[in-house]
Image (cartoon, rainbow over the protein chains, first blue to last red):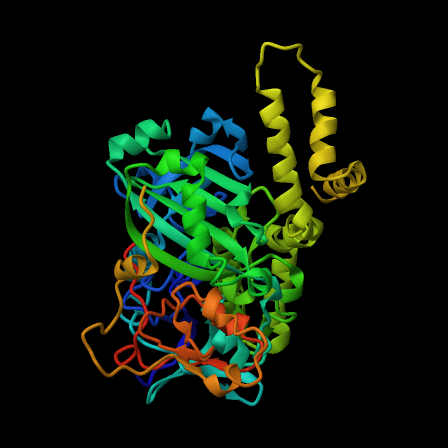
Length: 446
Length: 100
């Protein structure tokens, strides 16, 4: 191929597809390259795409009978576990039934493929119907540079040239490292290993068990015994006729505390989580249809590359480690969509002025800083740190469940006041001082 | 619900080029490093697909066939023994998720 593209996008996940959709609509000529057999073939997520941005890519996506998404979330639950009990905060609201939904559960192999189909449709309607491509099954081995400017990519013997390159290669960002925007070795400190199973049920059983109505769905996050003392947490999301259930485990902590003898490995801990009485009762009778794993970043700013651009090159999505869990939700795919859109919009403006200089590319990072993504990441750093404190993933869940057991036990003896029960639970599992500190930190960070 | 063993879990995974006997690995491991200076040999218990195993003598071995490309070893190994480099998809291995 001799012709030059306006942009080459590396990676057909949500970030790359969001960028592609934006470029197609703005009539730019681009090439999206994906190394998997199809967009989504290599992608794993927990699974909730939060927020309303999906509607920016696929307006009225909820009208589609069998869109690429599984269920919309109208029921949320946060569960604290100790060894034998669970204490949940549960919120369900019909306000969440309104479109655009505020969260949809997705299975990436299906979702990304569907979204790529939408991008193909947008290409067909653009001025470059025959000249823009979504090309799977190709590996980008190298970013071609002329001096400090990215000018294209190399895949095997083939070279493709473009005014700009968008890296949307995901968290294992080898090309971002190759161009020097990320260190060649990224330590385990702010990384978590996610493991997950997809468990299939008869759809009616699933809907009855989780009180689902039509395409409504539930998201449930877990803290405490889920991870057997390893930093992290668990999740359970309802799909159409399957559940996504899994854990994210702090990798540094897993390296320090893990052991094959104590059965502290990702798959053993996942099995323990599934055997917890509160979980076992919800997944009974299901059939595991897939086991998967993937690294995610923690949302700690220290792992986000300082610079997300070079002349002619932008980095977005998890390749830029844009992901955060500040306790309310694990957000990553929505950051991928927004950063992909922002990157593409920057390329559109650069194309208008024919200026792909580093100064022009920096405007992308400025926009990112102004967007909710970096505002949230900056504002909630304390919450991210707090969640990774053993107090939060061990002592607090134990304390809450200790209290729950006392408070909800009815015996034919005089009942103590809740305050006394709380005092005893605190004494058993933590100290008042720790809780006061936590309360102050919590009030500040949330 | 009965627990699955890791082998059963991995049996559910669709891999690329499953029928090919010759594949080009996307991870190279210098097990000399694992078996001489590494103080933790953590890949043998952090890898979700147990691609890194330890034999009775405590020596680390690596096989790429079961790898599900999660990336864990890329970060977990702080000794410089693990390097990732994807080959052409046609001659590589790696996953094809059905659900993802």
